[in-house]
Amino acid sequence: KKKRGSALHCCVPQCNNDSRYNSSLSFHRFPKKDEQLRANWIVKIRRDIGENFKLTEGTRVCSAHFVDEDFLPPDRAGRRNFKKDSVPSVFNWPARTTQRRKITQTDESDVEPEQPEAPSQL
Image (cartoon, rainbow, N blue to C red; front, top):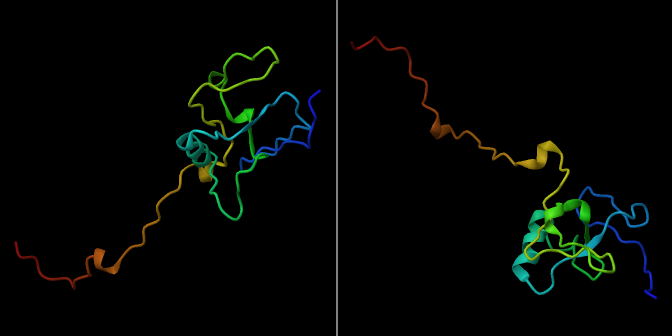
């Protein structure tokens, strides 16, 4: 028998999926061997490794963030494994954070100084 540990939680920001409340979801570890693929996952889920986010054995991304095409057919035990190079791509980010606008500040030197009205030289 497989020993059942504590509940699994999705590490994607703003995702509250938890294995205790949704048994239809699967929870997936980050790629271990392929460093570039692991880095792609981290970028896609908008996390930065650091004080507030560390990859551990328990760090998981739930299946809600993958499309069906990312998975191989279930194995005999019913497990859903990934195709090579699958990355999370389904997110419910608020619209305002989907694309960050670059804010430019108007520099005085970019604006032509106002000239006093001069008679036309036509």
